[in-house]
Length: 305
Image (cartoon, rainbow, N blue to C red; front, side, top):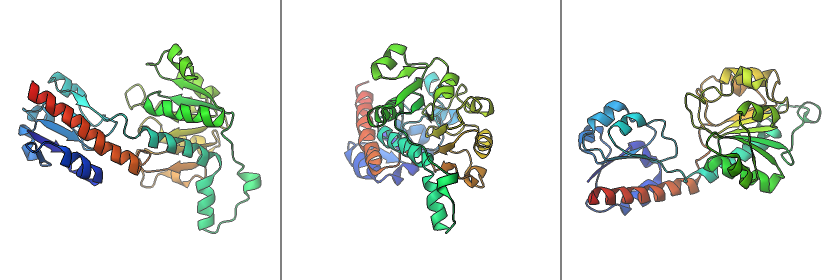
């Protein structure tokens, strides 16, 4: 059985230390796309898996994404060929949720701005010009209530006596109520009421630029927006204008569309990181463990087919 592993995947040492040694001895591994026509299982990393690749892979039986997002895979093409696509949904939700709440605290208290002013020996009067915000007892809006959204809500409810609103078309009002949160039928209403907004939706045609010039106008003046989901959900030009004009209080974004010369980095009320919310040692180890578990399951299915 031939298994293709995206070469970038090997930057995760736990794939080398846990996944690869745990595979059956008769499984051959390749990271050469010249072998595409012969592979049985495709382990996808960040690289695109296109329709052309799927059609060329005549022997392909399953695609496994070694992370949560599958937007780099042409799932429609895979579905047409009857090839299942799996991800690893539970590997990094704790890491992303913790950093999301960290962003809220850091934005609310100008932590990065304060730090950089100290590094650059810049004097700023924080007591008059940059007073912060607490999280305790505030209203939080969560857009997307999957594993990460639920964990963020749990932290906020238990630690900050929060009122939590959610927007997710796939969650019923009864399910939300059982979790201790309130379902909003329209995300615009969530934006109007929230002091903090946390984004955890996938990037789709429906969610692209959900946060734009018009929807930002609905937000409270003290609103803090955190995006740890996907680039493209937030219109970055509109966000810049809202932050620069102090239409909203602050924002953090882990998944910018462009990092080079991005004008958002010139603002004191913005924090930008380079898609690292899920990058903890614990999460990366779970990738190795969960990938091995999924591969062993799929190998067994193929053998018994």
